[in-house]
Amino acid sequence: MIRDHSPTRRRIDLDRAEALRLLGSVPLGRLVFTRQALPTVRPVNHIVDGDDIVIRTHEGCAVTSRTRQPGGGVVVAYEADVIDPLTRAGWSVVITGYARLVTDPGELTRIRGLLDPLVPQQGTDHTVRIHPEMVMGVVIAATDEAR
Image (tube, rainbow, N blue to C red; front, side):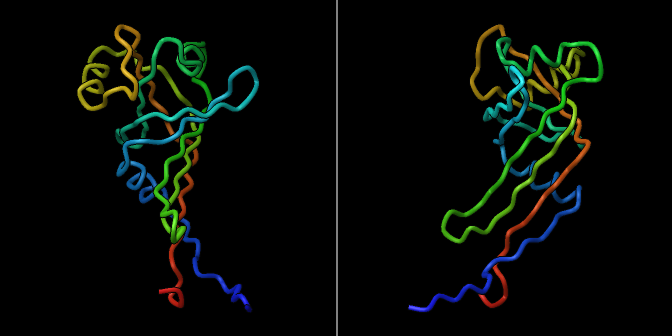
């Protein structure tokens, strides 16, 4: 059997606005941060609030303690995607930016009305806002020949 190795999918880079729109269309993603000098990944739910990604965490979460440190926040990455396992078509968005603990009482109340934590833990709830410095999004689409 001779296999045809011509591509059946093509990559389309997204602009910032479209990437953030797609990110806002799904409730779950993966937070990437450093723990003990090593990369760590955690599944979390999120909302897109303006251009920022907002998540809720718990007291023991490593990213929560890091966002309390003085300075401009902690560098993190956030990724979400929707990719069909059969066709391998879909999209992926990765943002990189600074995560900061939300402390304003009014903002906390507003966000808590919009976003439940992925795993609720009574009395240990924290909210983290991630401001994206870099936004990279890609669509993997079927080529015209594959359709």
